[in-house]
Length: 348
Image (cartoon, rainbow, N blue to C red; front, side, top):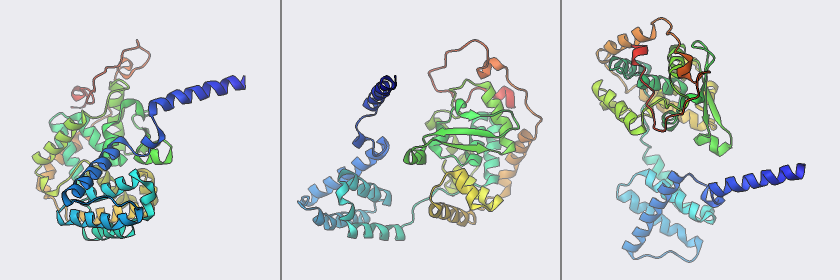
């Protein structure tokens, strides 16, 4: 019996791995591979233009790669392009790892003199204004997505892929456990990740939304539509000069949580950082940026009142079970992506 089970398991794994492909093709994510390939294409174009050839020995690569990095620096290219090239080079030939000391020294020098352009942290007052604007224009699911991303410290990709079935709640006043699956860090560790949302002001709205939609409904509209609304909101609120981006929600949530509780461990756990050093840099730079984000209260206060009116309203009625996928007739899930359903009649 055990021999038969072993054979079945082996055959199942064989079929699953056939769909996944070769191991060497799974070492990096497809989008990352695209960046690597683009970086290598530009490197080979540089060699052709300069009439250069690849050396026959790996030890001779360091000088050539260093010259290329100097070229990128002189051309005003971004550090991300140089980093993608270096990573792509080592991905194509792992044995180069210890053969490029001078090149990696140049990369370190580049990083020292050109700090990365990080998204500024969104503050809680700005978040409230954005949510108030969304309520005013009846973009309720967009307002909810802002709150979940900020207080859940979600990465933008995690937010845009979040569906109702991933959110587990026992009631409108109970914590929400959000199953994020294999995230960016989860793939490295080989384990699914989750967060627990405890913000009372968000739970009631999240519960109502979950009860009103089918399990495979996305919290947000399609990525390009959501990003467009995010940008439009900042424009209408006259906040474009601070260069906020969708990732500012995660940065702002982390900074807000640290200021509120003063616990680095709690921020690490909620934000799911594995390296303490990375989290410290993340928080320190975020806190330093807060001093430069001085938004006039006159721009925010009208929308704060709208936010407070919606958040402080009485408990919402629960949607019928049939809309929540309860014990009614089994329905076929829609194939097209939904942007959170029409909740305007519920919330406003």
